[in-house]
Amino acid sequence: MNYPLISKSQNNITPNFPDYQKTYKEFSWEKGRKEIAYFDDGTVNIAHNALDKWKGSETEHKTAFIWEDDETSRSFTYGDLIAETNKFANMLSKLGIQKGDRVFMFLPRIPELYISFLGTLKVGAIAGNLFAAFGYEALEDRLADSEAKVLVTTHELEERVKKVKDQLPHLKHIILVDAEATEHGEISYSREMKAASDQFETAHMQESDPSYMLYTSGTTGKPKGVVHTHGDIVQEHITGKWILDMKANDIYWCTADPGWVTGVVYGIISPWSNGLTQLVHGGRFDPDRWYSLIEKHQVTVWYTAPTAIRMLMTNPELLKKHNLSSLRYVCSVGEPLNPEAIVWGQKYLNLPIHDNYWQTETGSIVIANYLSMDIKPGSMGKPFPGIHAGIIDDEGGELGPGKEGDLALKKGWPSMMKEIWKNPKKYESYFKGDWYITGDRAMKDEDGYFWFIGRADDVIKTSGERVGPFEVESALLKHPAVAEAGVIGKPDEVRGEIIKAFIKLKPGQEGSEALKEEIQKFIKEELAGHAYPREIEFRDTLPKTRSGKIMRRVLKMEELGQDVGDTSTMEEY
Ligand code: PRX
Image (cartoon, rainbow, N blue to C red; front, side, top):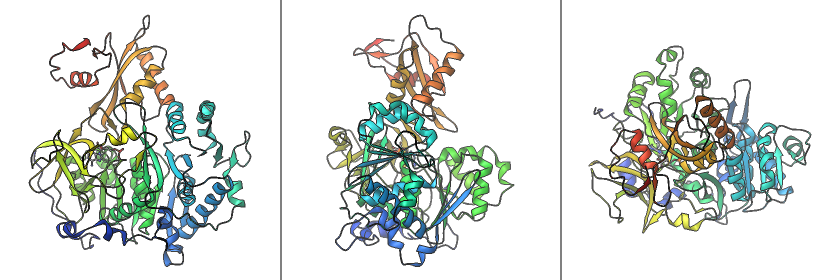
């Protein structure tokens, strides 16, 4: 079914970015830089832009942060956050943490996560976030590879770290945010914060100096550390202003967890760099609660994800209980936004949902639907000014409208990843000549709108979260009953994809429902709560190449009922 064009917003709010065509033609990143607070010596710091630059202005006294979980709430002015992050920076300095050291946060969505992240940037150390659902193996992989010196966590989450601590010789300090007294040499956050000064000289950083790193999954191998810089702020700030239309009087809610890049860039940095009030919900997804939060805090701009929207869509009755008229603008990211969801937004929220596209590696939004532009439901929109996006063939040649190919970006935008941590070969593999290859397949139409088609590789997107099949397969192989495993993303109406594992058991093992459940529990503990296979199928053999590699593509085609074609090159089938 073809969905009609949705005309650009007719409400009386003037978009921050009113004229796409004109600005796209005239824009340069140099112009973007004019929006950024540099130090007098030409250096910069993301945390200075998010917080310190507001010191002495009216914004210093305004609410920056409303935090609420299911039991309690807290709120902070910009001034409060400046003081808290200064204290944290002093705490790190006292521990001897310096520019370039890695400080990792393994925390749920609580205020201390936001404070320690920005406090780390103030020192010039590299901040890394670990999703609170991570299990032992996921933690060990990331903390060992990054050689993190400090880990900020909670008493409860520390239990998982203890199990792998012996494998982490670089980890010198564990800071516990919820413990006064500590048993094993950990540091008490509250005790140190009380003692620390609230004055700190934020580190002056070059644009090319690292700021934060996040581990993300590809199709092969363990997760890779994607490193970003302080120069990212140029794009982080201006995309928030122009795409998410952030205005100083907005109450803004980004539902993403800072364990993922959206939660870092548009859930910490960009909203505060744009001087608005942001809401963070510390609890789990719950439709009734989510609507209540919008209503209670009069949220105006809402940045969320397709899976959440699809879950909300299953219960239209609930909407009748709530008044969501404070919302003026809704955006979505992370996975394909189906046109039905956009239509739902129009019908029930009286607002179309604006889809946008980016990746951990791109560091900021690169393609978007803008408030000032008509929406073609199902399309990701058009490239942001300063971004040249193209559809290319295998040789790197740009394809014309209507042709499917690899979605690529001309390299050199400010928030492009700086490196893959300790893996220059992997970094290089992203590029073909001048092009950065996203790993996504897409098409561009006659009007310049981009349409997502699918991943070019085996990366899985489940509920908007990126999961590498290799990581799941290697965790599966640790289970004593599993001999071989192949993992794919299986299309799912609500979650986009779910993880499905095909497993060959060791001799003497019997496949049963009980064993499936045991394996699922095992993966949740080893790897992560979101990365376990919701479906498991036991097989006597798995399709393999002559060199013994399990062919996920064949498993996927079979799952989709497609013709597998010539199987003669396979060793086992
Ligand atoms: O496959 C694309 C999908 O998410 C991938 C990036 O995932 P991640 O690094 O976790 O970044 C999350 C930040 C958004 C992309 O390669 N993706 C992202 N946005 C969209 C999307 N797929 C379809 N439509 C989108 N709007």
